[in-house]
Length: 103
Figure 1 (spheres, rainbow, N blue to C red):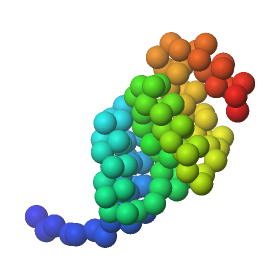
Figure 2 (cartoon, rainbow, N blue to C red; figure 1 turned 180 degrees about the vertical axis):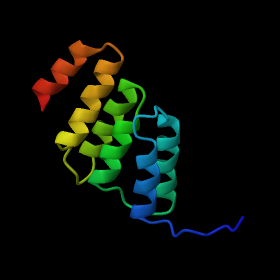
Figure 3 (cartoon, one colour; figure 1 turned 90 degrees about the vertical axis):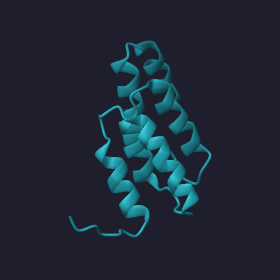
């Protein structure tokens, strides 16, 4: 097996995080976000949206939305939709309604 070293950049991180979409492997997403910070790779809107979609717990999705608000990126429709999906998957539809009103 030949191993290839891939440069750590926004595209490689976003692609990796995107593979976790809907897989509920949010712990791996959190690890990748931490790795991005260590490599001094800045998150972008795609990073947050992919990360929020991959969250298997609504609390984690909301934390990611909050952290997105602390950056230069505004949570967009895709990020809110991912958070709403996380809420509804776990029967937290009342919280989803509140988030919808905040948007």
